[in-house]
Length: 275
Ligand code: AMP
Image 1 (cartoon, protein in one colour):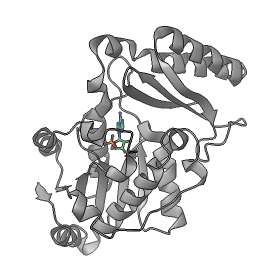
Image 2 (cartoon, rainbow, N blue to C red):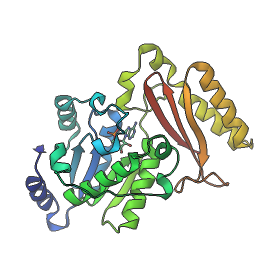
Image 3 (cartoon, protein in one colour):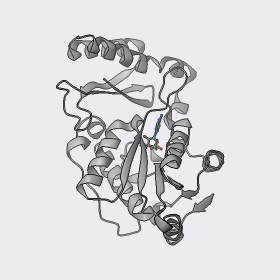
């Protein structure tokens, strides 16, 4: 496994990996790796001969009020997990490598970037779109694997790739969950034991709400009841919304996606499921 921290070495490794029509898959991450990330690496392995994982805690996608310095970091642990799962290249740039002094270009996305996480975290998707565009350009990857755990992010990045004619395929991967149904997340380790025990109520209520809607109930009242149940249990719900899967406009029948965000203590839990 090659650990790379400078752009010239990355370019050379990418050229080597892509020689003779071989494919390179990229898995962008912010580290603190868990089973969800490792599943993306395995999925990348199935569609490409070489898999690169980027680990970069992107300051651009954090608001000044969000504590970037408290984002969990575990470089040694991450590298051990990547060795075990079988990763070829780890791209670990530092902040000046990604954003040298004078850096002034940002990718601004409307449409699916508006509302939900885009409303809760105003500059978030600008940071995500900018860093992903840079990672795609730096690695020249053929495929990038993204987790459906961050459903809106998949739609935003897919929009960027389509709108900027980027020569890369976005491969979404289903959300990986703990045995009790809670979606794996680097932030889960910040839950207290009591909060951790309560957290799976969010996916459970989502499953129930979707079953009820599938049985013919109107989404509005069903989602209002689920929101109340979350509040009564101690969550601070931000949104629980049924949307069109790609545009994230309000659901109008047909395929739908239930998006959820709720705070439990200091941790913002995100989840989503197909109707
Ligand atoms: P992060 O490091 O949390 O920004 O996530 C890096 C990538 O891993 C993103 O594509 C996420 O959607 C994906 N990811 C995070 N958690 C999960 C999960 N539980 N299941 C599948 N993918 C995930």
